[in-house]
Image 1 (cartoon, rainbow over the protein chains, first blue to last red):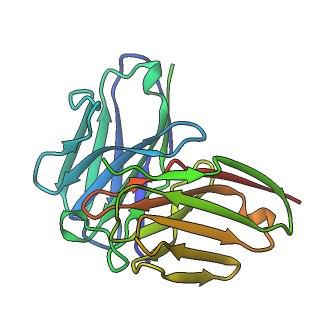
Image 2 (image 1 turned 90 degrees about the vertical axis):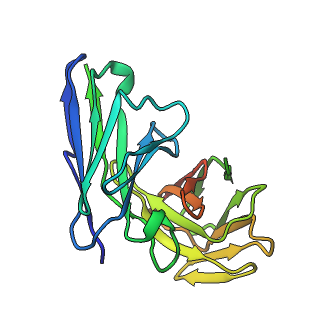
Length: 121
Length: 108
C-alpha cells in the first residue's frame, strides 16, 4: 500500500531556532500534501495545503511566515517552523494525495505520515 | 467551513460491550471517511462511505452513512482492548476536514 514517511518522528529544539519536518511519499507521486497540527487528545487541525510547484494555501489563523511550506517535488514536502517558541510545541502530521487538487475519494484516499512530536524548550 | 461534530467525546467501556460513535454535520459531504489513530502515530483509514444510506462492515465495526449524507455512525460490537484509540470521521472534497474526535478506551 501507499506509504508516507515523515521525519523526524521527534525533535526537541531551543526557543528561537528553526525546525524542518520532511514528508515523503515513498511509492506514489503526491500532487497535493496537507499539513496538520494536533494538540493532545484533540482532532487534527488543517494548517495548509501544498501543491507541487506552487505556493501553499494556508488556513485562516495560520501564520505563513512562521510555518514555511515547500513542495518542490512530487514526493517531498517540507514544513519549517521558524523561530520556534514553546507554544509551537505540538504533534505535526502530514498527509498526501495522488489525486489532482487533493480530491479525496475511495479511489484516491489520503495517506498519512506517522507524525512529528515537536517540543520547544 | 464544513464542521463535523462527533459524539461522544470520550468513551470508556468494558471489554465485550457495544458502542456507537456519531459524526454529524449541517453540510452535505460527497464522502466520509473514518480513521483510527493511536498515540504518537498518524491516523489509519478504516473505511470510506460514499452513498447515502450505505452500510459497510469491517469485522466487528459497522459504518453507516446517513441518507442525506450529512452524518455517519460507527458501531463496534463486542469491543476489545485493541479497539482503544482516537476515532476520527473526516469529509470533504478538495480539502478534508476532520471531526472533533472520539477517544475510546476499552478496559480488559
